[in-house]
Structure formats: C-alpha cells, structure tokens
Length: 397
Length: 203
Image (cartoon, rainbow over all chains, first blue to last red; front, top):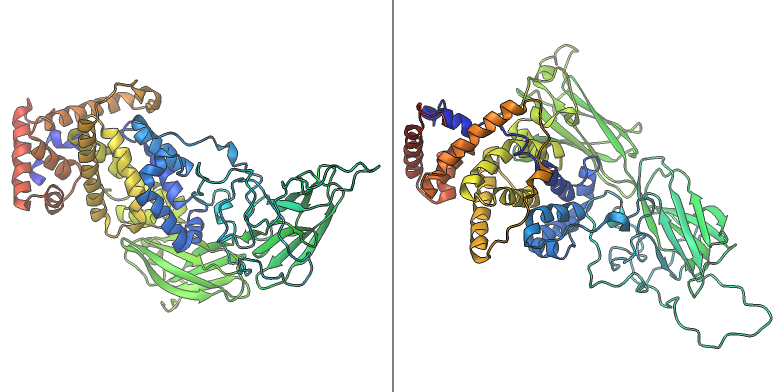
C-alpha cells in the first residue's frame, strides 16, 4: 500500500470524514446510551443490571431485536434508532414519553418485586397487602417468601434514567387489572343493596398507594414520598393518619413521620436524609399498607494521583467497604488491587510507573447499604516522570 | 483511529475531561466497552466515514441505512467483543459486509417503493469551511465513483484495504480469498484507477 499512499485517488478516498457523513452520530450514541446507560449513570446502571439484566438487554438485542422493533417494545432511544434504520420497512417510532412522568416512579408491585409481574401503571401502584403496621418489629414473611431486600432489585426498572426499562407489551394486563398480590380486588361489587340508614357509613381505608420522588439519591438527600388512601371502591379516604416507615438493611421498620390524609385522600412526606439504602412504605393501619419501595444511595468516588499512588476519596461509602482499582487495557481491564475504605472514606493504591498514558478505574463495590460507584483517572506519562520529586515511591501492588 | 489529537495532557486529568479526539483507538475501545460514551463517540467518528464509503461502493442504494444497522449491531454486541482496535475495525467491516449482502438480498426480494428523500431534513448544518469541505467531498465522491467502476470483488478489496485500512490478512479473511490474491488485486486495481485518471491519479 505504501506505493500508493501519495496517490491523489487514495488521499481522496481517505479524506477526513465530513459532517454529513457523521450526521448519524446522535442516533448511534442514543443507541449506545440505551444499551450502556446515560453518561453520568452509565457505569452504575450497567453494574446494577447484573448478570440477569445483562442477559435481558442482550436478549432484546440478539433474540428479539427486530421483532421488538416492529412491536415497538424496545427502549425509546433504541426504538427511535431502529425506526430511523428500518422505518421504510415498517418499524414504528417510539411512543410519546408522557407515560413516564419524572416526579413519580413506579413502586414495586409486591413485597418481592424481583418475582412480581410488571406493573402496568408506571406511576403508582395500589395494593392491600396484609402486613403489620409500621413499628419497630420486623415484618412477617410475605406470600412470596423473600423479605430481605437486596440492593438494586426493587427499583431498577423504575429508576429514572437508570437504563432501559421494558414497557408493557400490548398483551400485558391493562392498567385497571388488579395486582396479583391483592387477595381482595377493590372493585368487587357490593353484595348487598344500598343501605337506607340516616347517615352513610364512614369509608374505611382499604389501600394506600405510594410513589417516591427519586429511587436513587446522593448520600444525605431527602426524598418526597406521596400516596393516596382509598376505600374498597377506590374512592379517596380523607383525614386518616398515615405513617411513613423506613427500614434499613438488616434493620426493622421504623416510623419516621406521620401525616393526615387530605380531603382528596392524598398524603405527602419529605423523609429524613437518606444515608444508606432503605425500604419505605406507607402504613394507614394494620393490613392497610402500601407496597415497599426501595430508595438506594449512590455514593460518589473521586480519584487523584500523586507520585506512584492513586488516592481514592469516597462519600457515601462505609468503613470497610471494598474499592477495586483496575487499569484499562485494549482487552478490557486488569485489576491493580483491592483496598478497604478507612473510617474517613479514603483508600490508596500504589501504581507502577508506565511508559505511556494509562487509564485507571476505581470502583466502590456495591453493598446492602449503597450502590456501587466508580471513577476514572488518566495518569499521563509526564506525571509519572516526576515521581522522584517527593521522595520514596509507594510500593506497587 | 490514527491516535489522539494533541499531545499528552500537562497534568493528571480525569478522562471525562478528554474530548473523544484525545483518545487513542485502543483507549477509545477500552472505554467504550466499559460504558464510557466518549470512547464510543471516538470510535464512531473514526470508523463511520470509511464505513459509509465502503458501503457506498458495496451497497450504493442503501449505504446510510446499512451503516446505521451496522452501528446498531456494534452497540448491541460491543460488550461481548474481545480483541484489540485492529480487530474491532475488522469486526465492524465484517458486520458491514454481511449487512450489505442482506440488504442486497432483501432489495431483490422486495420491490422498492420510491419515497420522499429525507436527507434535506437531516442535513448537517453548514460549517465555516463549507467550501473546502464541498471540494473535498466532491473529490471523495469522484474517487468512490471511480472505484465503483472496478469489478465488484476488486472494488470491495480496494475499499477494505485502502479506505477501511485493514491489513491484507484481515481483508482476505473478510472476502474469503487468499492474502496473495488480495495483495495483487488491490495493487492492480489502484494501478488501473491511476491509469484511468487524467493527470496520473487526481480524480
């Protein structure tokens, strides 16, 4: 090829790309985001997907990608991209986004949302799950068995911007279908004729819905929890005491706030600062308890380099949490070492001087108390060349 | 994919501060596979122009659509890809070849229905160097038109070797021919094109 490198023809063929040739960049990046997650939360979202989530995404991509595109069940960015590619052969564009309001996110559809069916209504759920009121005693075992919350499983699909979330397909239950965990559908017809007494009976609360303003928060953030109290016919119930209960990992339910339902049956709380993952729910009285919704803490982690050392500083992590440092290579990543966070939320890694610029990634591993977090750092060769300035280097790991 | 733009940064810098052009192809691939959008953007900007040009010759009636399909496929399987940047480039063009063949088959099986040309709606805004860009684009288009006059197999090998920048062995693997055959075919094709061009090669 070297003989022809100077040919005008070869130079013309190899000319830099024009903006017109790169016009599809936005669509391609949108598809990339749909698969790997939004820029800020990409790594966290990818990490939270786990093996099962990854398999789900891959199954969409490999198995049913084209079919899903035709049935408009891909995530919106991917659907739009597929539409732009396959539109001439009938692949529709994504549906409008008004079905996903940002302020309210889906509450899990049962005590163990990992096994619960998808909730048709993406904003709130209403159920009547027999459970004890919000006290300091642990809850009884639900019908599905698993009560111990695992980070990431309860609200992954509902977290805004937390990666692709499957939309209900046309064959799935309609929004008016009762949840499968509800033993007594609230829309059951009355079995007796209307009473003719002098005063109507006071409506009894039978269910309370729950929605949270954000399912993933920074350490110390507060979350607005809202809900509506309804009776057996779905009518709102006013002036009822509603308690907001939190439960931390391994802890017990604790009431953190109490409010009265309004004339429309609604209630809203601003919860206390969330410093670790919690499950939350609203309690009206015994057997009138909302679904559980998980609120997960996303720690922040920052890297800095000095001499032959990379320092990690973490906010939201706990002493003893594990931090892994890896080096990005052409084949993926190579682990440099593992450290535990100190009481001040810091850790240090010794690194070997390298002859070229190196990208390091540190990840705070996920625990029951928080999500994972990671950060990247580029250590240029020039900085490594100054390693002898401050004395003896740290031993490499 | 010819390395980073600019020299080494003067101090320790978060990779999130680097523009995609500041990444080497190996870094871009490594980052893209770990979910860093900048890595993917760098890969796209490096590979999309040669990809589109290759498909202009290989599948002239649907180059842009096929290219979009290729990137959809790449995004889909990127996490599972293992190999270096050169292998990635070869992988992308292998996908492109398969998609172009599929596109040709589908077009044969399904009569086309003329529709309005949507390119005006997605046209790139005019850049400050629009005139220079237009001249360069014209030269590139003329060169592609010249390559398209070659026999299809030969044209494809030229595009993979010259435009995609793949080595002989990779091109041979993609088109299913021996490396020597590719080497000779590309050499003869370029010589033939040079002879066709007035003034010794300027398209």
